[in-house]
Amino acid sequence: MSDRAPQPVERQLPTEESRDLLALVRDMIQREIAPTAAAEEDAGHFPREIFALLSESGLLALPYDAEYGGGDQPYEVYLQVLEELAAARLTVGLGVSVHSLACHALAGYGTKEQQATHLPAMLGGGLLGAYCLSEPASGSDAASLRTKAVRDGDDWVITGTKAWITHGGIADFYTVLARTGGEGARGITAFLVPGDAEGLNAAAPEKKMGMKGSPTAQLNFDGVRVPDSRRIGEEGQGFAIALSALDSGRLGIAACAVGVAQAALDEAVSYATGRQQFGRPIADFQGLRFMLADMATQIEAGRSLYLAAARLRDAGRPFSREAAMAKLFCTDAAMRVTTDAVQVLGGYGYTLDFPVERFMREAKVLQIVEGTNQIQRMVIARHLVGPETR
Image 1 (cartoon, rainbow, N blue to C red):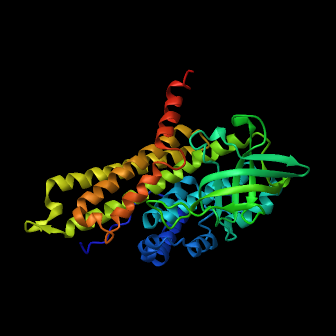
Image 2: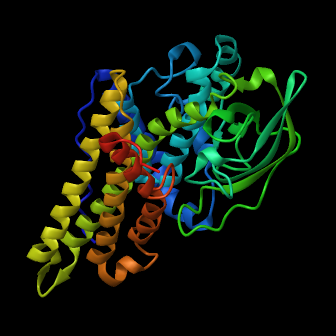
Image 3: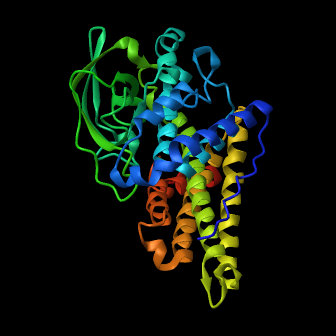
């Protein structure tokens, strides 16, 4: 392997404050995250202490209002922080994205009283959140969810099962979508459920091919009682709230995908410039040089796409189509780039001694979470030609 250290990505950031923020993040990564990332992922260790540090540093609250402890940063900046975190360890980058997703409903649709009561602890008080939409029988077809919330006086009683929940069983709070009315999207309402609520139990974490340090589990709601004061938005507004959160969440996944791809490219370049064959570095051979060039081009294209979508969001303009495009392109690109990185390293790339095999396994899940890439294509097509005819 070459002694050449990867050069930090040159970023276009809007303010001096955001440049200082990124420098802080890079320093924290080098000190606290990168040195133990490979070993902790291999051991399946969830770095709760890192999330406590991120919360204390304000990095779990970047895109939210300072009034409640947020960082008041535009998505253009927040996503580039996510990219850097994911490049160091996807469990951390994706975990920050999921936490931000879990805060979205309350921050965007809660009452002033709810926000003042809960947001400070959620954003900067060391808490960790999770987002509960998917179920065993309703993944892509989220509007068909069956978890029910039934009114009982001033409370709601929630019964059902949620599936594929990142931070399931370890989160301090859950944003839960449950059915309070009839069938379809209009019968769904959002709730903020404490992680220690009576009747809430987590199954054993799923055994996954990648992201072993990030627990993913089913949650069983066995008559979980929450007061109406924890209902977010109006009754029946939950699905609209969920879709709004997912548009932003898909940008988070796109940024994480670019981070993983960048880490894979850095490793491939380092190896190619140091590995000697036929008396010269393998980076001298045209076929491999072209592979590296294609990898770098896909990464830059993905980064530009997610940042363009983020700037639309920051300007208050519609960005749903662009978010789907970014999620689709960036995660597909990450799968191609990480696979090519394994190829560049040859037999070494297939071993646990180098991180590219982990990057490849991690890239796969990004094509699935927060709406599969087939769903993203459906979203984009609807913006182009309208909904499907029945």
